[in-house]
Each structure stands twice: as structure tokens, then as C-alpha cells.
Image (cartoon, rainbow, N blue to C red; front, side):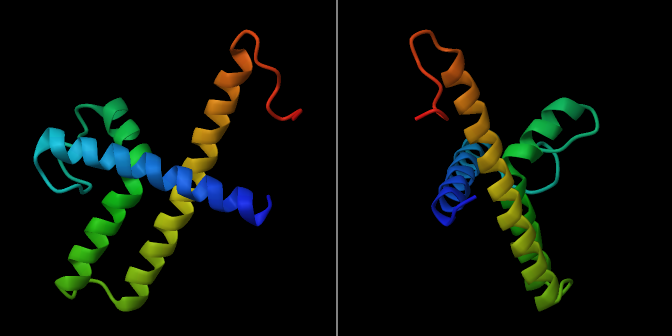
Length: 115
């Protein structure tokens, strides 16, 4: 992947994650984290979907909280940040792949990859 495509996928993932996180926080009225009501063993599929979309921000929120309370080292915080960035990139690739697949199924739309 070229640098431009990688950057576009990263920004797409960041946008999708940010939108999902904002909607979830406004709906539930609580800070985003790996806790109920966002993640629950009673609602596994909903928890997986929420974690897949908003997981990077959940991870960063929990990591920053642990770092402020001195339960996480600086290296641990940095590793959580790198993991969240890779997660956002992977989410962006999945979102773009899904959008390209949907666009390819629309009548009258040529293959985007052929352009």
C-alpha cells in the first residue's frame, strides 16, 4: 500500500471510530471504556460490534486512566497507543473494503479498482 492509501485508510478508520465512539457516549451518557454498558457478557454480539468499532478509543481511555493512577508505565501507555493506531488502520481498511464492495454491487457502477 502506498503512503497516500495508508494515510487515507488510517483517517477513514479514525473517522469511523470517532463517530461510533461519540454516538455511544452520547447514547449511554458514560465515558467510553471496556465496561458495561459497552461490553457485557450478556450481549456478546453487541459487545463485539462496539469493541470492533470503538475499541481503539476504549483502549486509549482505559490506558490513560491507568497511567494517571500510576497503574501503567509510560512504555505500557505507548504500546497501547501504537496498538490503537494499528487497530484504527485495520478498521479503516475494513471500512474501505466494505464500501468498495457495496459500490461494486450497485447497478451502473463500474469496478472502482479498474479506474
